[in-house]
Length: 161
Image (cartoon, rainbow, N blue to C red; front, side, top):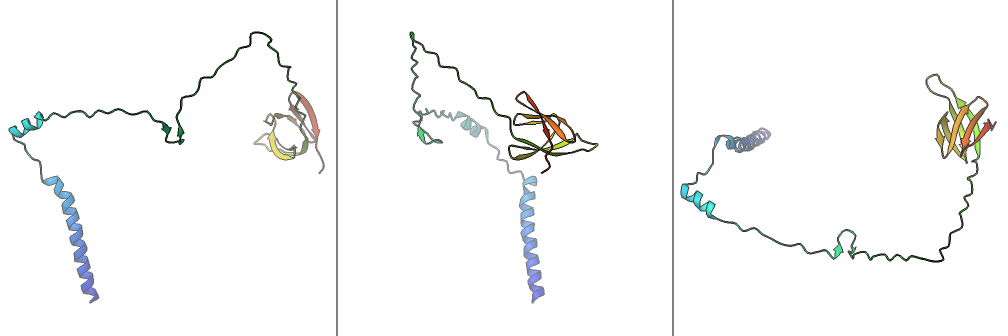
């Protein structure tokens, strides 16, 4: 019984694939072009098609922002001709030098020295010449590091924490 079912399924699958292959290949060998007679060609050329014209209406609402597309109101500029007062100059307070802690350095033959700094309670790894938040590492020594911040230079000594 199982052998008969397998044979029946095999014949069905082969028939199905044969039909698909025939439909695919038949398009290449059969020429289904329709030849039109001279009278039919003239009739087709005689049909004149009118162009469809339309106008677009202006949008009242923006479909993406879902709000009215009103024109912006013109801004009125008022000029003072007399009695112009000058604002007092703003006093800019200098930014204080950040809290910097030096915890050591790493030295390797392939790369520049790498220093571990704690700037305002954030640990950072920097090399000589690099800067972060306005703090620039100038020189690195075993026991200290020279840094610049807004033109102010300081030497930070390694802490033993």
